[in-house]
Amino acid sequence: MDADRRGRLRCALGGTVFAVCMAGTTLPTPLYGLYQEKFGFSELIVTVVYAVYAFGVIGVLLLAGNASDTVGRRPVLLWGLGFSALSAVCFLCATGLGWLYVGRLLSGLSAGLFTGAATAYVMELAPKGDTSRATFVATAANMGGLGCGPLLAGVLAQYAPWPLYLPFAVHLALVAVSAVVLLRLPETVRERRPVRAVRPQRPSLPPQVRAVFAPAATAAFVGFALFGVFTSVSPAFLAQSLDVHDHAVSGLVVALAFFASTAGQLLVGRTGTHALPLGCAALLAGLALLAGALRWELFPLVVLSALVGGTGQGLAFRGALAAVAGASPPDRRAAVISTLFVVAYAGISVPVIGVGLLADPIGLEGAGLVFIACMAVLVSAAAVYLLRRPVRSGG
Image (cartoon, rainbow, N blue to C red; front, top):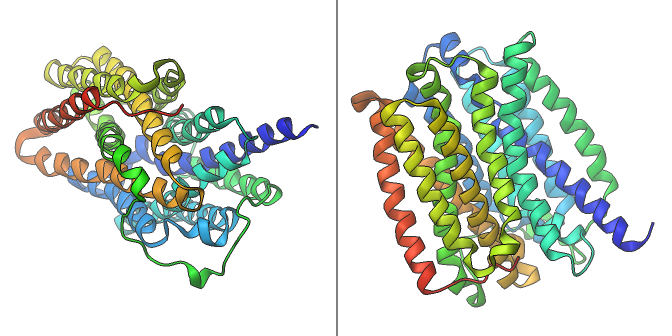
């Protein structure tokens, strides 16, 4: 096998490991209704349980976002798989709400270790000169994995026995296989240092990255905020307002948003410098469709909002990632990517808790409409800025 083919295979295997880890983070999504019935908690608690995951991600990115630049990619990713396995064990053993909090926190730790390190690793495993393909594999593994989680759990919960156990048992098996694959892939960091050299980092950017970071991060924030709402509260909205109680359908609706994101990433090469503003425009359209779905309680609009909003998120996110990674020096790339993900995961957590807080006094639909209005203002401002100062997507 020649070097290019070997590099592409390694890149694909690295992306598969990335996808398995990320699938574990969204696995509980269509199961929250079952947990509510079992443990008796409110919609606010659902959003808090969900947000605990995001806080775990942000904590790791701030404390050890540059760890793989220091100790190597593989050790950090193996730790990430370990936390993913422990998270699955917590859900398998869950006898109360506390188990869900711990499981989601561990899931956040695994995602925090993976986001920057796995993205950089997949790009480094690819053959030289194949940056565009490697960027797509990394972002598609991230979003595709996030989409596979609720789809797998929803199908198993609806059509197989033990709905609160089997999805996590399957994921444990996939994590074990992923660890074997990872151990057979090469390390890409040449100058490694001991763990004690890892230092907590404040969000900071090399001077050459700052010009592209603000608009890229704004687009990432809004896109992840839209995904946060879809992932945490759309199953409840489907059940309460649309009388959709099929777990497979709930999981599929959430998965469609993530799969549409992957499709949107494919369009970036054709849109060039317009990827970010076009992504913002599609996000705005997705928000408008979601507002219509909430206002008139129409299932087709929920599906359309997932598809359109997901496509916009994919356009914006891949453009943002490519621009930021391309502007970063190699020895700071994982740390800079981690900083981008800190902003993105702030979007996935803070607005979602706001929706949960508003759900009791004004209802789930009203809370969703307030969220949509806030995000529409933000994404519109970002789009105007990007049209005036185009950012090169890099691929």
